[in-house]
Image (cartoon, rainbow, N blue to C red; front, side, top):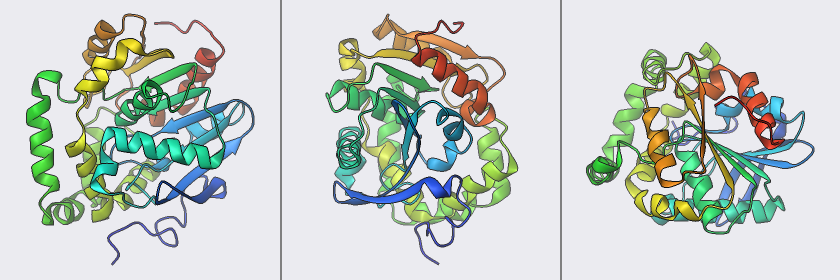
Length: 294
């Protein structure tokens, strides 16, 4: 059994498969989905996810936008990078190369969890110049800034043990285990959605990249640079998020007072999967300059 997801097997019933393409950029072979017409919206998923996370949101947004969604390096069907490519700066640079290859310039970025940190790094580094960044339960200070060193050291230790991804895959790839892990984020998603996660979590390469991504990140420079953000930042928070405490959004706004916080009642960390139409309406309203309720 291959340790990486195979397009011919795991990708056989992949959501929005007709919009998928494989592109070479930054020394990687990327899986990316593009659909719709209009201003460009870039979607960036979080750690251990892939483009399946946008399976319902993406078509809803494509009624109004050109939507582009890649699998992040080492995730899903995109090739694993070097260890340097899993750092926040490395991942942002790789996505910049992908967008250059595609010839797309996002006007809006909507990014989930750790993907929000990638999005903000892209903007702060001048790689893209969107007018709006929507962080969907953004992981901008994982485990709390006071625990950042401990969290990074622990993740680095786990990522450095070659048997750990295989061990995690053995457990987390079980559908019941995957379902429980997802429920523990405060979200209830469809059985189909759970199976997409389980199919990826069975693959040690996918898990190794997720662990390596966490081990390589230091978010303190991002928070330090955040006051220089020129794009409008909206922090969308699921009130039931048990993965990223909703209070973290207030900590981010303390660094960037211009940021807005919008709460989605009754939803958890995977709010965009639980309620894709509501999330799409919210993004469209914000993109059009609307005044969604805070």
